[in-house]
Every structure is written in C-alpha cells, then in structure tokens.
Amino acid sequence: MASSTKLYELKNAKAAMLTKHGKASLIKPSLHKFGIDIVTTEAFDTDLLGTFSGEVERTMTPQNCAARKARLACELTGLELGIGSEGSFGGGPYPGLVNWDTEIIVLYDSRWDKEITAVVSGPFSVGKIKTESLEDLKKQIANHSSQQAWIFRGPEKNHKGLQSFQAVYSALQASALIENDELTESLSLEPDLRAMHCPERQNYIRQTAEQLAQRIQSLCPSCAIPDFWPTDVERGLACRSCGRPTKSIRAKISVCSECNHSEVVNVDREAAEPAECQWCNP
Image (tube, rainbow, N blue to C red; front, side, top):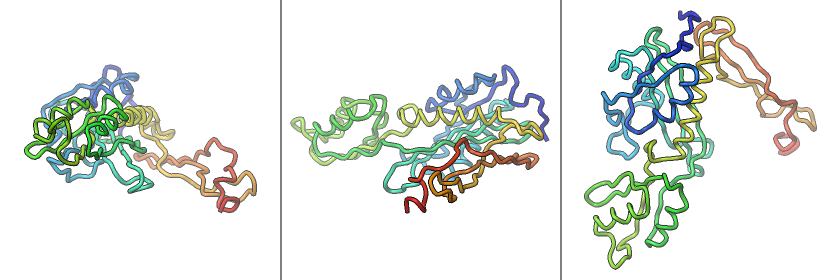
C-alpha cells in the first residue's frame, strides 16, 4: 500500500499526457497549483482509440479509454504519472430531451498502479444545425460561440474545424452546394466536438480538472491515501414544512479505496423545501 509520503504532493512532479486536441492547457492550471506539471506527447495517436466525428469507432467505455490513455502516457514517456482524458455525449437525466456531456480525467500512478478518476457532467446546448438557406445558416452559427467549430460532411470529404460562417461557406462552395449565392439543397452541420473547437466542452474539462485536483488533495483520515471522495449518498432530508423524509440528499458517504475507511457527512442544509417534498408537493 502507498504510504502518505507526499505521493501526490511532490513538488516539480511531472505527469505525461497524450493529446492532440489541446486539452492539456485546460487541465494544467488546476494541477500546477500543487506541483504537478503536465508534459505532453504525441507518441501515440489518440484518435486510434475513437473519434467524435465517427471515422474511428470507440470500442472501450469512456472510463476505460481515459485510463488507457493515462497508462499509455506513462509507458511511452517513462514518467511515473500519466493523465488521460475522455468525453462522451448522451445519456443524462433527460435522454432525448437535453444533450448531455460527461468528461472524465484519470491520473495514473505507475508506482502503485493506482488510478484517481474525476467525472463531471452537465447539459450541453450545442447541437446540429439544419437549414435550407444561407441567411438562416449565418444566423444559427452566430447564435453560438465564435470559438465553436462545425463539421460539414460533403459528398467527397468531411470538412472539420469550420470556425466561422465564411469557413462553412467556403466548404459548401468547394462541394458545389452553392449556386447564385443560394443553397442547392437542405444542409445539416454537426458541431465539432473536439476539445480545441468546443468551448462548452472546455468548460466541463476545466471543472473536471479542478475536481481531480481536489481528489488528489483529499486524503483518507485513516491511511492518508488520496481520493477520499463522496461516492454515495443518503436521502431522506426532512421537509421544512411537514417534517417527513424527502428524496433530497441528507448526507454524503466517502469510502477509501485502499483501507475501506468510510465517513458519512451531513449536507449543509437544515431541511428540504416543501417544493421538494413528495408529501407537500405530490
């Protein structure tokens, strides 16, 4: 078992990261604050593990894919720490109604064969653009961040990283889909979900990196191993009005993956509101 010998508190520690989509710059600030510096490498093409644009199907789960990237980074660089990141879209609490982004970052320590995994997910507003006119296309693109890029699947090639209306226009021209400054057929654009082209993903990746930093610094009270983090909850917070137990969270449960020490910590709420109560608000 790893001791509390500053395993993740080492100053000037270096962690390897395989990336070709600019994610390292989003993760670095959170880890640099307590002494871990990210060293990037392109010794392995991470697109071989799967691409958002569909050229390569991802066969592993997002969790396993992130862990694989972290372990590969160690193997290919010889560094003891490796970082892997993976995102996925879909699922969430309202499948089919609300787009959902889940970001995973894994820190792997090869000395103790230990993984620390941070996960953040949330709603995602960027979706496909469907239109039959250039004027409407321009308006829809303008409704999104200027940093959001798009993918146009042309008849002969896919045009990716299209970061403006003019870039999309040029791709359509190259595919002979514009005549007399009008679309010759209905158009469907997909958002480019690669991290360097997707600001909403970037925000979730930053949040995930911050959670990873917190997990690394959260030590088990019993054995001082990092990643002592809430993994379960207790529901039943009493209603402020009727006093009955509700489905709202009453406490969070943290369990150490090394020594199995657990703690139950009450949430910082005295009571649930009547609007949350299945008795007062059925």
